[in-house]
Length: 116
Image (cartoon, rainbow, N blue to C red; front, side):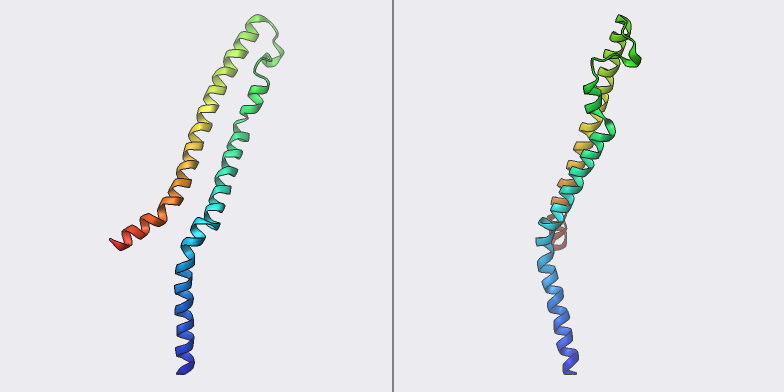
């Protein structure tokens, strides 16, 4: 009987300790993990959209067409694509920023709803 009481108290103390350490982990290790996730996803989106590549070849005619019409069409086509891809990148950055803000807000909100 004494052994069962000691083990029960160890389990309860461990549970209380875990409840105490959870918010600390949420805003240190968990926030670091989510921050790395967000940075990685934004970097992947930048690479997937290849905006840097479009900027690098912005003034180079597409398909080697060096005529004036080819240059003008290439310029405006790339301009439209850069605006489109930049808009998509901006929307993804907002989305991942919302994920990060949601991560920061979930713990206080859940505690608020538990108390009330």
